[in-house]
Image 1 (cartoon, rainbow, N blue to C red):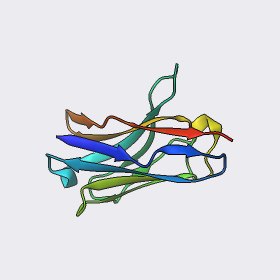
Image 2 (cartoon, rainbow, N blue to C red):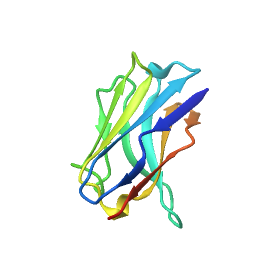
Image 3 (cartoon, rainbow, N blue to C red):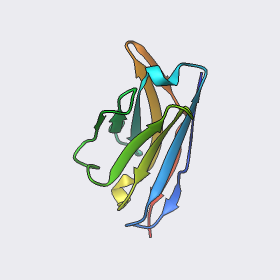
Length: 115
């Protein structure tokens, strides 16, 4: 089982990034997918969730209207489009696959928002 994130980097405030997470080794379409982030010294925070068929999404208030999660089950990939980025969005972003009691995690990708 693998979840491999990509797309992180350094971006100026107000900029955009799109993260990708490619899954392998399990039936991707059977799992809900989530993006989490963790900044140094802070607890891990859920930033986006999507149902297994993509029909339902959820976001916390901190990113609602700025972040969009989507998935392509044919490509075993989940995306996180991040717009209007703020310095407080700086963190390591990780994708998570969940079904019942099973959880898979990626290694994370660093997003830094700074001028």
